[in-house]
Image (cartoon, rainbow, N blue to C red; front, side, top):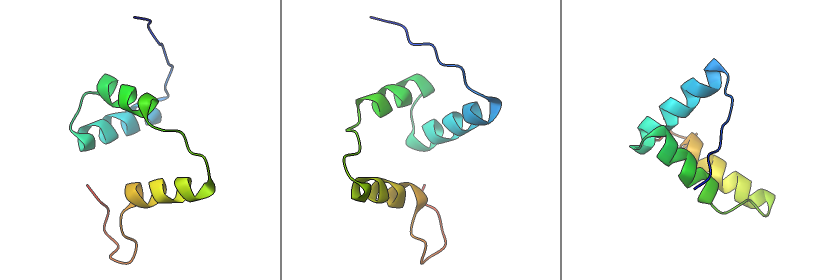
Length: 64
């Protein structure tokens, strides 16, 4: 198995920690899941993903 090394800023490290905790997994597992996810093909795919991550703006609450 290969090893991937990525340099992150403190802010990026904090965001990764926050998102992995929200997903209920370790950071390395979360990164592996992101790598395996299907790539975006159209702008509609990007918008659908952003909607899932940002929550329902009509309610002004974020999804956890």
